[in-house]
Length: 230
Image (cartoon, rainbow, N blue to C red; front, side, top):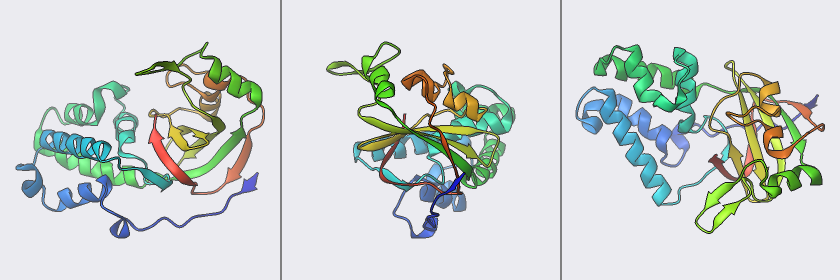
């Protein structure tokens, strides 16, 4: 087991404006931002905020934690036992609160506080061999559809990572020469994340057999690249 360097994350109060900061601001004065103490207006507000970030080309880079807000879907599934990421965090929380909007908003902030505390215990990394990259590039086992047609799921991949989180879940990352991508759903074990699991797809589902995993003991993982949720 190797020990990786630890990067101290910047306190959220010192970060540039971002979705996580906005949620904390809304929590202090929900009526001012949402017009009522209800979860549905919050859902639409945050969707709009994220759409604006995409339109402005806002990029996420550096520390992986706190996790991108898109993982709130998977986190709410895990925490509430709903087993339905497709429903989304808002619907899952409303269901748990029997459609009581005000109770659901209160539960959201409770869950969100827990969500931002999710960290990492350790991770495994594997550099991709020529054969692994060729399997991805062949597009025989999957591809991404772009405006100009199909292309490999990952362009110029170089390494894969599996993170063991501080909750009972695992996360798969794929590093390319330009960016880092995270699978948007959690895995239940490191073996699933490393293997051929179909939904979400494990590392070997993209790149074939990988035998070069190295384990690192660290609570942080830092990338000087744009990080995107796949």
